[in-house]
Image (tube, rainbow over all chains, first blue to last red; front, side):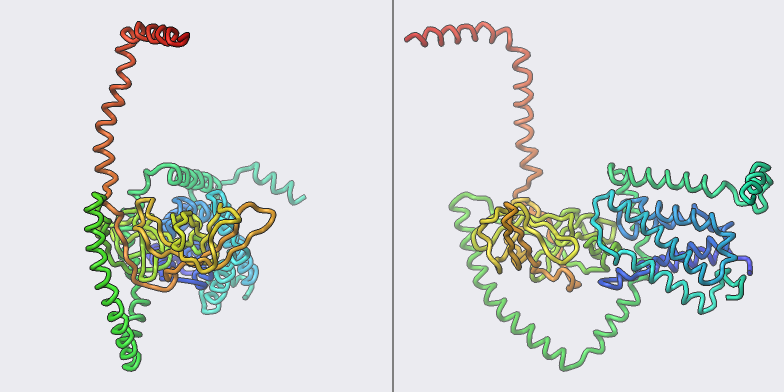
Length: 159
Length: 336
C-alpha cells in the first residue's frame, strides 16, 4: 500500500460531501447511499493515523448542516460507526473481500440505527424497511468501487 | 486456554506497537458526549441558529457547485425544446393571459368597490402582501421530512414564518432562513399545521400534514361535520401569517367509523407541492401591524397595570374604612 496523503483524504471527503449535496429528489433520495460515511470507512481502514473518530465526528457535523436536522445527530451516528470500524481495523484489512463487504454493511446499518434511535427520540415516525435502503446501495457502491480497483486492503487472501 | 493467555497479555500492558494517540474508546466517549451536548443545546436552546446560519452561508458555494450539473442539464434541455412545443405553450399562455385579464378587470372594480365599502364602514383596509419570487434549489436532504430549499434568504428580506405559494395554492412555510437560501417546510410535512376554512360553508379547522403520503389530515372534527368530498379548503388567515383565501387542499376522502367520535378526513394539496420550481414567498401581512398596535396598546395597558399594581399598595389604608361602610350600607339595605 502506498502511504496515503492528507490532501487526498480531504479531497475525497469533499467530493463525497458534494455528492451528498447533489439535488437528489423523490425515490433517488431514498436510495442515496451515504457517500461521506463510505469514504470515511475507507480511510478509517486504510489510514487510521490520519482519519480517525474525530474526522468522522466533523464529517457528521457537516452532514447535520446539509440535512438541516438537529446538530449532533449525524455526528453521533458517525462517531459510533467510526468506533466500530477502528476497533476492528486491523482485522478488517486482513478480511477477504466478501467478509469486508459484510462488515461494511454492518457499519452502515449501525450508523442508520443510531440515527433512527435519535430521530425517534426527536418525534419522527417509523417508515418501514425502506429506511435501510441507503445501506444496501452503499454496500453495492463499495463493491463496485472494489471491482474498479479501489484497494480496500481486502486482498490479503487473494480476493 | 486462549482466553487465559490473552488475559495475561493484557495484564502485562505491553507498549503499543502503533502510535495512535488516545484509545478508540476514549475518543468514542469524548465525541459522543460532545454530540449529545450539541443535540441537547440545539433542540432546547436557540444558541446555535446563528452558528448554523453562518456555516450554511459558507457552504453555499459548494451547494452551487453541486447544483451546477443538473442546472446545466435543465438549461440545455430547455435550449433543445422543439419549435412546436414552444408554439403550443405560447398559444396556451396567451389564452390563459386573456382569461386572466378579464378576471383582473373585474377584480380591479371589485377591489375599488371593496375599498369604498370598507371606508364607509370605517374598517381596516384589506391587506396587500408583498411577495418575492424564488426558485426551489433542491429537496431537503432528509428523505423523511418534507422540506425544500429555496434560493432566497435573509439577503432578500425573507423572514421565518412567511407563506410559500405557487400558482395553484399554498405549498408551505419558511421555517428557517440562511443568508442566501431558506428552508421551506411543505404543508404535507408532519410538523406543519395550517389554519384553514372550508370555502363552501366557512367552517374553520386546522390541517396537519400527513408526513408519509402527500396528503393533509383534518383531525379532531366530529363525525357529523359538514364537509363533503371535493370541498375546497382555503387559508382562513386568522393566524396572521397566511394571507386570507389562498387555496390549500381539496377533500379527497372522508371516513367515519362507529368506534371513533371523530371523522377521518384526508385532503390532497392543490398546490404543486412536488412539481413546480418557481414559488412565491409571501411576506407576513403587516397592515394589521400586530407589533406596532400591540406595543401602542401595551404601553398604556402596561402603565394601567402598573397603576393597578401600585394602587392596592397605596390605598389599603384609605379603602379599608370604606369597605365596612359599604358593607354596612348593604346590611342597611338588606332589611329593607
